[in-house]
Length: 135
Image (cartoon, rainbow, N blue to C red; front, side, top):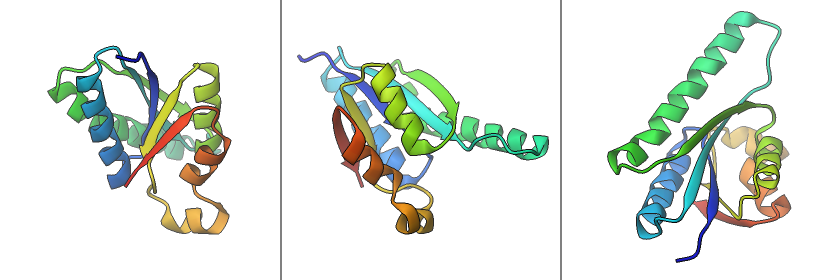
């Protein structure tokens, strides 16, 4: 089987959890597939209480997304980063030499995506590797 290094960004939305389930099935088919789970939290605010709440929410998203992999006994690298989601995903994919990004087609912020362009739209157009969108 083809070795593959896959980046799975998750925002905890239904579509990102479906993308995680899809990635889990691929890992079972291809044991050489290496998967990294990435949760992107908003940049630090000027309020410590808000920052703590965002960090806690990011950990909850990570745990929820990991559940399916753990049930299947699959190993996954885990990362939480801060910043603009599309920028962080693209930079991570580039720096980490990922050859595939699997992500939900729409995240938690439908209105924001409609106004300024969705994260998945930016990633699919700017990534230097394969991108699979799951809905």
